Image 1 (tube, rainbow, N blue to C red):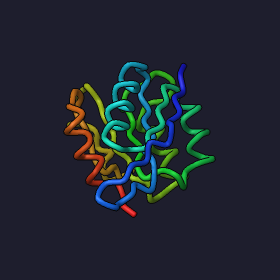
Image 2: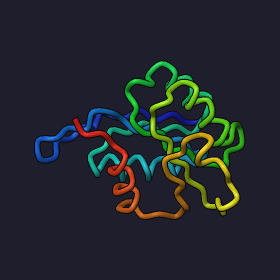
Image 3: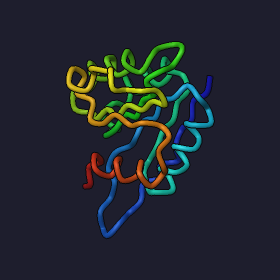
Image 4: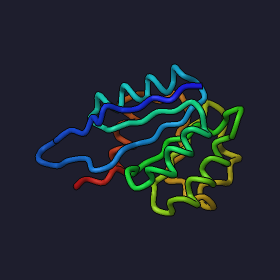
Length: 139
């Protein structure tokens, strides 16, 4: 059970500043580490968690700081759909992106939970950065 906190990696790009952060939740430590590092390098402020209960508690206290929540669908303690349901109750405006290495064609969750994007693992850091950029607000 790990929790990773970011070093506020907010960057400036052509006089535009990213105003909010990304929360990543995946039960696999290595995936959280890779995603966090690649998105931080791309200039995003990222907080990563492997424990959904810790991530949910953190989000409850800091929901106004997040623009995007990136969640793995399959996790042992609390699956991604349950986690997304809790997130949506706390914040109706945060953008939720879900990812999985498994087939997601049969998941009928995109409209009911207002999931912005379903991502099929594996994906490249560049592809993820482009998708995140599409949903990230610029101040």
